[in-house]
Length: 93
Image (cartoon, rainbow, N blue to C red; front, side):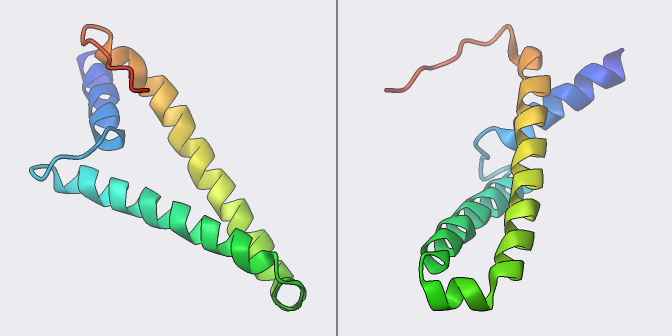
């Protein structure tokens, strides 16, 4: 059970905002940030009829890839959240 808790806690750390001291967490942050930017770019490009018609299959595959990645991220965030039950959460508005 201890190993399970360690994995759950590390998963939370990787998905939380990374610190300069945690290279793996920074890599996850950068990967997700770049994926978001690429999705915004894809949506903008897809709004142009000629581009959409020429690259519709590529857009579809990229969308499927993105949905899978973001779904995995969400599931891991929900799964790892209980590891932080003793810490106070800040609510930002």
